[in-house]
Image (cartoon, rainbow, N blue to C red; front, side):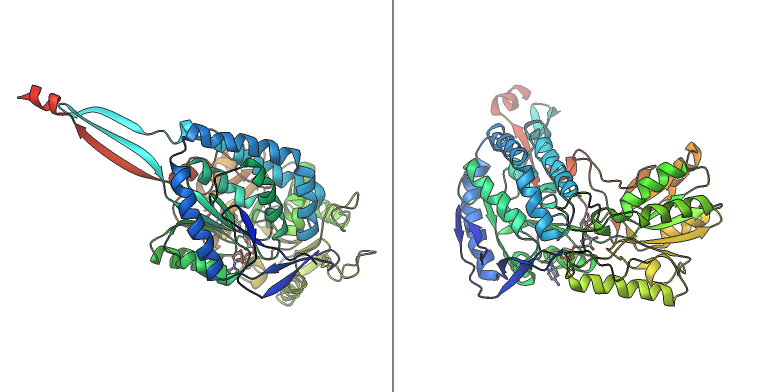
Length: 488
Ligand code: NAD
């Protein structure tokens, strides 16, 4: 059985820890590899290498740094299918979903290739007679990413290309549940021949996170995961003087107005709810119909029943398993809770069985109707293939319900009325808004704008925010003696 290693200072090395856990295929429970649960000594080794790597990397011109990213883009494109297969094996999503996440990863590499222009400074001549002032951007130093399980390939790329292009050295901490994908990508990245220490990977879980939060050489941390951990990482990182951006959990509502196109809405909503088995931070979770709802309800039920669940590499499969047996049991307990709160099952996906994959963590598409708006099912992040359907009388009530929620990752509306869409865009308290869109995922040029408990920090991932996050500004005020002489 393969035992995974860390990548430090341009070499694959054993972890200092002897605690290993199995990496499982969630569709079959097959053991794919063993991952070390690393510790602070592993982080210290990586940080030491990254500090050295930073010295060379920061003085490599940005125009040269992005040449590595151009090669990285080609490398990722040429190996997308292979990487996607690994994503399917360890995360359970379908092959199409896995390829789609790599498209998003590559898009961020492309965007970061514009760094020579994106990190340009500013210059003002004669802020006083003979005195000029300018601002330059310099990298922070060593930065790190702590990633969740649900996008094993994409999420690190919300940060990594920008960090490297800006001149930082980097430490990747993949999710211990899906460590194979980034291990494979880092192995591919060896072909780039980056200076030693610029790119490092440490395997593990909580102890590695704490090691990152406490290591004085690590200056910037990008975290993505559940809100409790995001808050912990943000507060502890900030207390230790680090720059932190921490994306948290979500509970994404979608309003369907009576004037929405039923067929289009139903298809898009179903893809949003059940894509990646509901394990997306932008998965629609609560569908709020306003007014007449018979047709949309029937259409959603029909589509949910017809969705094919199975192993993501098998043909025609539209939805894979959830990540772990614990996750399956947590989601099924939440469904039961919704029923005990008065909800009605329209489609029951509990106890799903897939031929040939009897041990898999499968839950079939589930729809539960008329749950109380303040109940546990309506307010808890489910992170599984469960659609909660609630019926409300007015758009104002629907927006009030959305704004009362603690998360603010995404909110969507389906309508053919421009004025209702505008009202929603203006009033809804969420950072990513979809109008006739089911997964409002910003492309690489835009910030991934979670609000409320879906985000802790100031600067989001991607786009210009990433340039701000991965650089510190230096302002220079400059007078030359000759100018000074002239003045007198
Ligand atoms: P998680 O919070 O369990 O783990 C995320 C990372 O934190 C992992 O690397 C893990 O090793 C580490 N970690 C876990 N518990 C920790 C602890 N107690 N102390 C320190 N570190 C800890 O999240 P997950 O289950 O891997 O991912 C699912 C969650 O991520 C969902 O809540 C989902 O909404 C969220 N998510 C959010 C976004 C976003 O953009 N806002 C994107 C993807 C996923």
